Image (cartoon, rainbow, N blue to C red; front, side, top):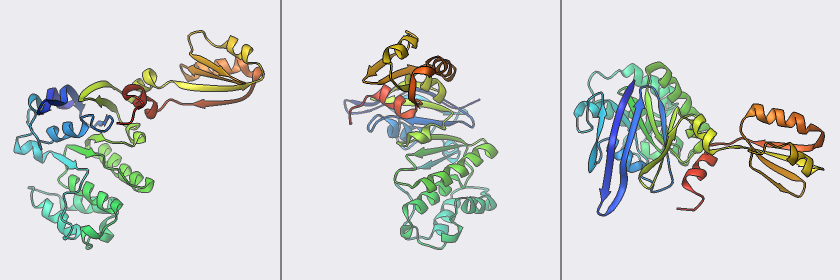
Length: 296
């Protein structure tokens, strides 16, 4: 069931079109990733979806509620790139102050979040004294303490170590399973986007591709099989004519369509193979294929 529906969303700054008539359908319980290079329009889109800025045109609806509606804002949680917490207050003071903004807050749930994100032991420390990973775990706890239906994560893992990222995603995935929490994520860590249920690739303010990760991989990220051989001609003769193939010295590189076809080819070519390597297509390949190799 669709939780969030967005139609023809547009944002302009002077003559510059930052977001150009984009359409989104976010289903309940989904993890949806927004991918795109710097300046693509991801954060601008998030700002409109969270009600921080108003679009020039287009509609945003969550079960009939608009971002300007008080109830809409109480059903979302937001983790910004830069923290909004008070550096001079303790972790617990920050969280309790935030909890006071909502009615019928479940304080047992807040304590559970603090334990899950390993911040109970630092509850009495000032927020400003925390490490980057500790602050980020507190930021996410703050965004979740009122049990929002929809959580926005705007590049939440930038600068964090792998252990902290793993901890954050372990907790978030548990909440998704238990509460049907829906998450919209922008990230530069493409391995995070790899676990998304659905991906929107945004560039120059437009959605240039949207599909499941598997469908995007099938279309834009082919597997590459590299064969080292003593007989390049015989290996090439066994390659399906529809598979893009290049040869250099004693190596043959083949873009293979799927695992079964690869196995069949390897069985046929086995007498001529000295070494082989299979590189699976990934989110990096999708990103480069859609947005280009140039530095922005």
